[in-house]
Amino acid sequence: MNSSSGTLLQAIRGPVLLIALGGLAAMDNFLNISFMKTWPALLILGGLLKLLERVSLRPSAPAGPPSSPFAGGGS
Image (tube, rainbow, N blue to C red; front, side):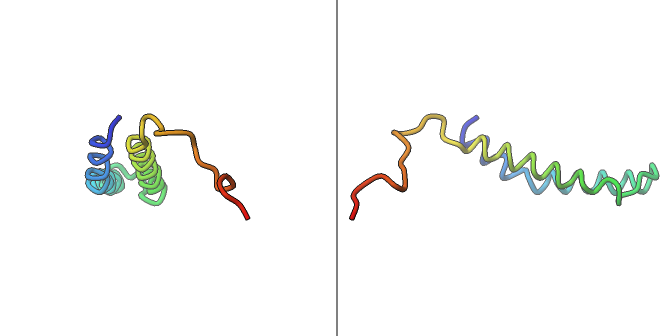
């Protein structure tokens, strides 16, 4: 994945969560599946979208060796 897919994930996160909320509300209304039992699906979906966004925005190759907060000049 690249940064454009990360930007896409940022752009669709809100609409996807709203669609999921509407779907859960419709299930509550028409299928007698209580919203109180299904609302954690919104948290799971939001977490998955955030995880995918983070993975897609991560640089593919490091520029150099990782820096350490303990390395460098000293006193």
